[in-house]
Image (cartoon, rainbow over all chains, first blue to last red; front, top):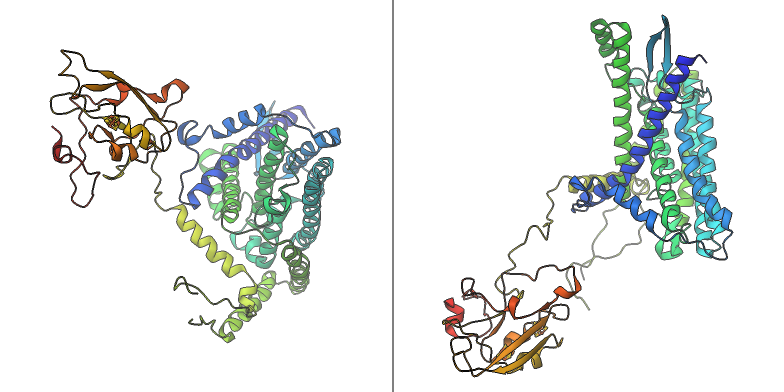
Length: 386
Length: 188
Ligand code: SF4
Ligand code: SF4
């Protein structure tokens, strides 16, 4: 790599890393605000204007709490747990293409650098690999605590993550089949025109993917690794101070990455409707290079708007739905999502064979019709007067 | 035994396919919560904004003076006896010559203290007082205190100022503590 490209890459990595951390930090604030608003409360509003300094106050509190390690715990693993969780969470954001590319010239040479920290053509595989390592953070933490309840929480996390990863992967395969590439950039570029966004071509896959992403992030309604009533807390029962902070923070980074992933895979990433027109007019009025850069910036902003929406969606769901029971969770994963995602793959494949992109609408339509029929046939539930 | 008429018969019926698919229910749930998101919040920002809590609210203690500015309390100690939290303590003293304009009776409370940490604002002191000397203001809350030496309220904080006299509103619907007519109407 030449020097200017290297510098540009370094800057891009720094900026994206910073934005990731910033968004993750402020998600903790946003979570409290959203929760409050959904429950007709106001939420944090004391630290700074509208409580905007709340994350800093929270961090300060985390730092000054007693850093406690149980005497019977295996010390190094106990410390390693939160680090692993944080590390894997941060690593997974490395391959997401956050925007098109920046153009600039240096010594009369023109460069074109993609807005993506690491460009590898197996981005999807990489993310899967790293995300599936994420469960080690929880496992190690729960195991090292030397506490039966923590261990149970960790085991629940492991079995949940593994079972949902299968459905997650299978629902993604349909997209990979349509794109024919494992590169996230290729997948995004495939969705250049609005009606080819994968949300339209893969409605069923989207629902499965979204649900599994929730389960992967251990967010409600799938936050089984923690449960006050059954597990006296969960895998992090023994954790305090910043080590607990790392676990919680990793969850928010995971949420950010999942949101980025969802918007990249199903909502066209940095594409938006009428993008060609906007880009064309920008390049006409500002010149090819500047116009392209401005267009890239707009795409970047659009992508982050999508990400923020999905982060909001994660919170919205969290404060709406109750937690699943563990056997229901397993049933849903193994008996519903895995068969459905296999069906999705088969139908998509059949569609591809006959060159028809919207084939999975077939399943969706059949399911809707069946549901409506069953509703019509079902006897009205009666309230028996007493 | 039926306690309310809102009870619903529990049904163990098989769910229909639409119900089993969860999604419609999930979406309607999401719709409900998002409506709350945009709703006006009923929160009152307490220390900054205070709400009028009605004429029966029991707040800040006040030791009344009479029309001529004499303290009504005669240090009989009935309020202290009535107080379930043992929050009131006092030291009685005898009125000297020339102090008739300060105290109404021959005996008065030289020290009168209410421990606001112990007080449960039950209002029994107000009921017990034969002289209509102690009241719990309906219109003023005890301010928040942060220091430990702030919570014992002495006469400096309790005895009312003549330019800031406490008046219990004469609301016909609210039966305030039976008091002297002058007090309920307008203790001028
Ligand atoms: S209000 Fe009740 S608790 Fe408080 S001083 Fe009076 S009698 Fe005691
Ligand atoms: S306030 Fe009333 S009850 Fe208490 S000592 Fe004075 S006169 Fe007696």
